[in-house]
Structure formats: structure tokens, C-alpha cells
Length: 196
Image (cartoon, rainbow, N blue to C red):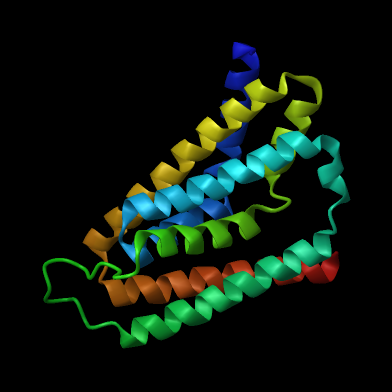
């Protein structure tokens, strides 16, 4: 293992992932499910899987069909936007309640849902390409460890940010805002799919 490769991968991936759609998705999903550990496990697992794919595939990632990935991502975010908007209308007004409602879904279902959303959203992402590029000329295990550590940190920040938002905004309003964010991400992905 190479410490320099671990540090380089961590720094590059962490900085690239912070303002990314996956970070936003993790924040939104954390605020939606209100169960931080299952959300973090799902997001981290998806991100770690993507980093393993990036390291293993290396330069082959550039051959993925961008239009299909972008179209699938757009559909996923559009579906998420609709579901979040509808759930906000069904959610009780929590303005008078002391604590927001916690999802009754089992932890494994939350983790699998988050895994699917984050896994699809991360395809062809800058961090995946960065990791593949680093793995092309550095120790693959070191790059993987650095990238996965960065993704674990970013997923943790997203979960904490989602829980913090619930203390400031009512749950139904946060769901409406999240629906808007997901709709915007769907539009961006759809435009990417159309432009190819």
C-alpha cells in the first residue's frame, strides 16, 4: 500500500463529492427517512461499490453509454421528486410537534432504497472517473481505500446535514424542498441524456 496514493485519492474524491448530487441525495434521503444509520449504510455501501467498480474498470469507464446512464438517473430523480411531493401532502403538519416522525420501514429496506438511489446516481460521476484515473497509474488498493474513506466521510456529512435540517424546517416543507431538488436533478440528467 502507498500512503501517498491513499491521501491523494481521499483528497481528490472528498473535494469532488462534497458539492455533488450524491451528497444532496444523501441529505434529502436522511431527512426523508430520519434514520441516520440505515441511510449512511446504504449510501456508503453504494459509494464503496462504485469506487470498487471504478478501480476495477479503470479506463474502461469512459466506454459506458452516457445517454443511458443519464436517462436512468433522470428517471430515478423524477420518480423520487414525485414520491417526495406526494408524501409531503400526506405528512401531518409537524409545526406543533416536538419531534419529526421516524420512518417505520425496516432498516434493511431503508438501506436498500438509499443504496439503489445513490448507486444509480453515482454512475459516470466525476469521483468515479477520478478514482479510475488514479487507479490507472497508482496502487489500486491504496486508491480504493482512500476513495472509500472519502465517500464514508461525505455520506456521514450528508446524514448529519439531513438531521440538522429537520430541526430548522418542518418535515412537510423539507419534503417539498427535497422534491424540488430531485426534480431539478432529474432535469439536469435528462438534458445530459438528450445532449449525449
